Length: 224
Image 1: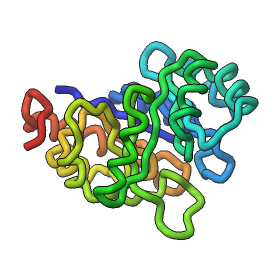
Image 2: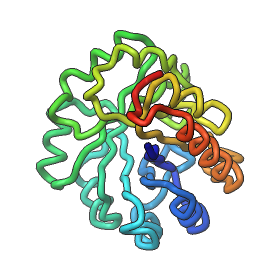
Image 3: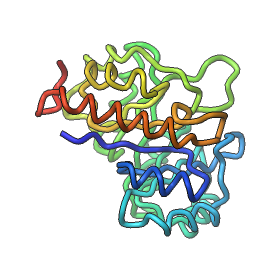
């Protein structure tokens, strides 16, 4: 089974084209000024036009208000909105109603109890993204290059659709897929030579590792 791969935090033509040419199913553009991967909506829109129809275009926001979302959606024309802040279920419903787009809700995971936070969003969020809880002092909700204990997902209901994120790289993605049976993954800092700078060789290595893992994983995608 082919794993969906989202390369997030894209900012350049070279990186966008390379990601899609080498197998990215999703491309993520981050709209959060505190992030080194932040991009202006118009710039993101121009990049997205190069790969529209070849990969899903994801707008990543953090507690964005309607004015910001209006600008982002107008310029980018995303396929998916990723809400990576403290947006509650009511806000997710509001965003879906206003923009008519599927929403992926990011949740931070550190301990088993964090999985309980999924319940209020079931039937509301179209997909989840599980990221590691940010380290102390970080102003970034994601892209911190840290992982959580993937074994926590053993308790997850198999019907929950999610992307696995947080600290993934070419060296550990095989283990992550084997332990979780994840059908979709998200990577940002793990394919960077510096914060916000995508490295094409690291990207290639990551895709190579994903494909090797696919070759030995169960056909059903179930956990081993």
